[in-house]
Length: 364
Image 1: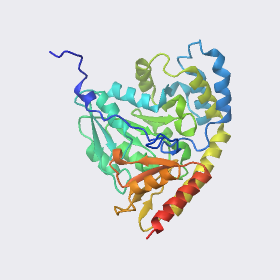
Image 2: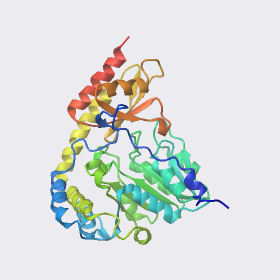
Image 3: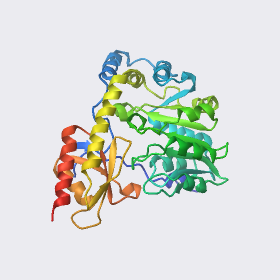
Image 4: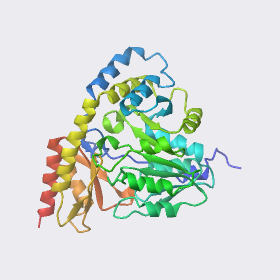
């Protein structure tokens, strides 16, 4: 008998998620290009709503997030009764795993998918299987090959963090058609607001015609990362299960008010998307050399792969950028040690990134 409480083995096997750094080793604050935050901050209307709510801190929030769900439904053309909200999409992913995964069960994800998927799987007592990718892009055939009789959920970030790649609507449909009807397909569309590819769909249409698909979204990438608000769209039976599991007041009132204002501020979202596309395309175009490669992206970041050559490695680039006052995301935890993920920031920050890495490439 142990002399202290012991957590389940699957919990102790979890490698804790480590967010991107925001300070130098000396503690100096740096321009943070490591967390995929909004390059233009929050919607002014969301900030106004946040301030307005300050005199209501003693009140419990609306446990059903009614106004927020209605706003999401109005903007995206969805039935509010099929929308669930959570404390960030991370909470939604955790609760879906708790609901549909147990000891002995499996989930499937792509090789370089979001690191939270194995965490929520292990927390539920299951095992997460990683399917190989092809050129840093999810492979539908590999995902389907990874499915077994134990599979309960397939997690797919589309577009994907950290690679920035995406699957077309045809490929998503092919993936869904290859799954058993009792397997839940979770389409994590956290970066949907930034996508401009003509053959992309976030998953709404598939949810509308299937009983085993949910689409998850977040407000974190469009300016409300500090408030932790996420939402999902799914079949009524999955909403019923989710609402049985979640806390009665899982999203606080200030977060609900700011998110409602943010989703209705479609002009700000369009401005954010336009800025991001301009800066993202500039990075991809300019950061190409014989010593590193920047991959096309549909997100608010780009992934750059560096040569395994002394003086030109990802670590060298990371340190050079830090000397310039910029911090980006190292990719060791994703199994991509030769890569850096660079979040889109201001125009001045992007030009400094380009100048620094071009000088590094040209050196010698």
